[in-house]
Image 1 (tube, rainbow, N blue to C red):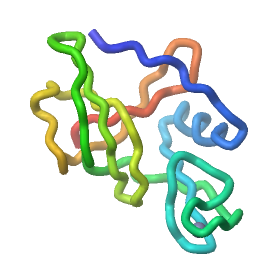
Image 2 (image 1 turned 90 degrees about the vertical axis):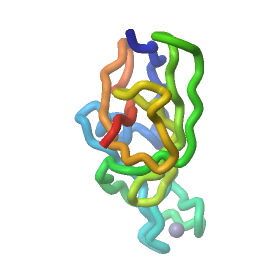
Image 3 (image 1 turned 135 degrees about the horizontal axis):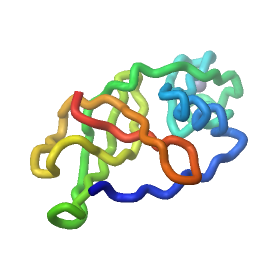
Length: 127
Ligand SMILES: [Zn+2]
């Protein structure tokens, strides 16, 4: 049994991100002025305030930065901050492993699950 995840709200600034997620691709924003990647997607770079940002496809791999497991037994689920290999940190649900097996530093990869009434929601599983 898996926990139901509500459909995401989509803004014009994040539409390309969700359309790519529906196609199984992970996009992150990159600033062409300073070279930094960022997430969540913004039109203005949070590092140098440049408007020169572009979409880049991320590898979809990263490392568990921190995590917390809620609930018990079959109802338990784990939320985590995952640091992508490109640099940005994302809050995501972890799937595909029992909660007690998660560790900080564990390698993970992004997968996309369709949700009722909305775009695919990215989650991470063990790499
Ligand atoms: Zn920048």
